[in-house]
Image (cartoon, rainbow, N blue to C red; front, top):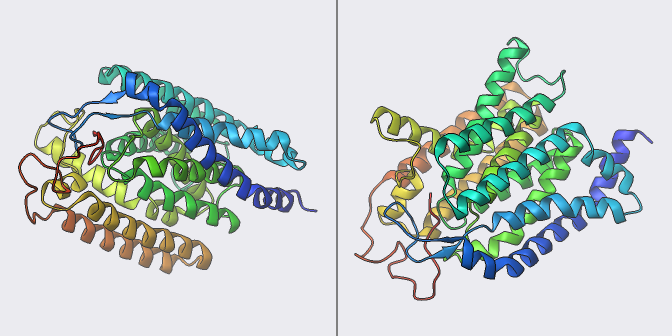
Length: 373
């Protein structure tokens, strides 16, 4: 049997085990660590927070641990684990895992005792550099661009993606409704040979872990992801999208995170133009303005989820048909949908009652209406 076919067969057969295993492990780790998180990693509301009562953060530690350890365990115990083990031992996967763990440690420290921006940035640059250096030498997105310039652009883009995922993790379920459709689409695209098998394995593990985290973060959240989760999730997701782009599917790689890219980038540009301290926490993202302008958290995440599902469908369509005309049409349609969403979120409707939340009342049970930016 063709080695590539064998790898895909093993990955498909182990898919359910990885999905269920990472989800169950994430939920179990969260339940076990909740007392510690309540004691040492409590996010207290401030003027720039979307939540109104102290809520534990740090659920991302369980997401990262489950996504990392469960595939290794399954590869060890499975009779066909050799193929999975080879995927997990590939240099780009190992380098990305090491960098993600490093960012998780950085995020955990920052969740407990906030760090200055410069040390955070230096550590992020080191993690991104490790990932980019481990990318195979023959990996390219745009052949016409000199390789060294392309690698530099990729590193800067990945650094931005790490931070924008962190910036956008500011509302209950926001990361869930963004990354669940994205990782699910990447799993489907692996079956279409648009994502390398190792990337498909990682996407499947992340998908399961995020589903295990989702019940604890649904509005009103009992637990936040925290920087310990958002930073490594940004790195790994960015690496997965690079793998998709490197196989000739740049349109799909842009469509999948298009809402996050647009909201975070336009918000940053607006703050830079206004000469604001853009590296500090704030409440001016489009989704944050929407809750301040009258939409409830479920209304916001419902809109974002609907657009992300369409974007995922468009991305899969561009790969399935493989026609440059469809790529352009899909990108234009995706851009139009995201523009309409941003305009809708930006619009002021009604004000939430004074002293309340976007739900219209102050939670009495220690839950919250959203994560801190």
